[in-house]
Length: 385
Ligand code: COA
Image (cartoon, rainbow, N blue to C red; front, side):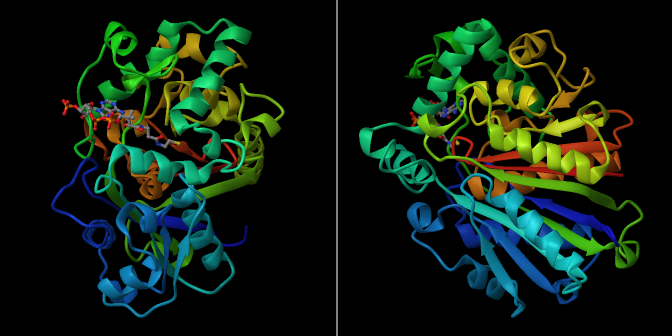
């Protein structure tokens, strides 16, 4: 990489059921906050990338690229990027590449989703658009169902226990208490997780990320202009993207996301680091089993040991590696198109050292792991101070 790309501003809305705000309000709020954070106004922005999974199904609104650019008062190049729940991180990559290609100096990357205006049944059906419709959706599978199959197999093959499965949710709800934007900032216990309403055996309500509204934005700038706006630029050191079969039955295994393994290898190589160098990571814990597989797929722990490591506290703030300091998708919420950008914003704030109570002391290298569907798209981005 010749000149590096820096993140110079971040902006987040609250995540949750936000009855009084539509998707355009959320996107504008996040973008405005990011510009304020970067000490700039909209005239400084050269282009925009918008991550969104399914505004058409969830909010009846397509054509977000132009809608959001227009609302910002800009008629700049604006592109919508879609890769299911990984749309946000894909948008970060595209924004970065547009700068590296010499096209732009400053790019706003935003992500938004408004999911709570439809019923849970409609949201579930909408989300299943990210799975294989012919082989999975048509037969009645849901996302909790798909991840329940992976959880059962992980428990069978590696002896992961029901208690270990609950551990990421307990940690992430705890971390969410320190995050002002979080949807579910409260403590839960192993007993509460196990005894909550069953959604898809073995996953209960408290093993699932919620249905959320929210938006996030970051501002990217080429290195030579970044320092005009901030003294604490955080650089994108590496990025990796890989894909896999949409249908679970076409995959090599049910107990790992091969796309995430491949994406992380590429990102580590590009950044010139290894898993051991990562101090803080935001991983895609759409279900508790997803975080257990993520910490294995990323190479933080050996295959099959993710559940034990989480239960032993190795991924809590200040542990061997701090995972999901934001509260993750589980505690902070999962407005799907915004998630990858919220992850990036969290890591940037960690590396700047200005994130308050949930600060990982001395954090210099961080990572985001963002998964689309049940693992058919995976994006890993690495950030450095
Ligand atoms: N975690 C914790 N609490 C949750 C929750 C979650 N995931 N989802 C809802 N709640 C809470 C609500 O706040 C509400 O609390 P209250 O009674 O104190 O107000 C209560 O549980 C019931 O909420 P409700 O909206 O009726 O839940 P629901 O049954 O409609 O939806 C799920 C629950 C688990 C089905 C839904 O959150 C879901 O589908 N999650 C998965 C989303 C998904 O697949 N995302 C993509 C991943 S790849």
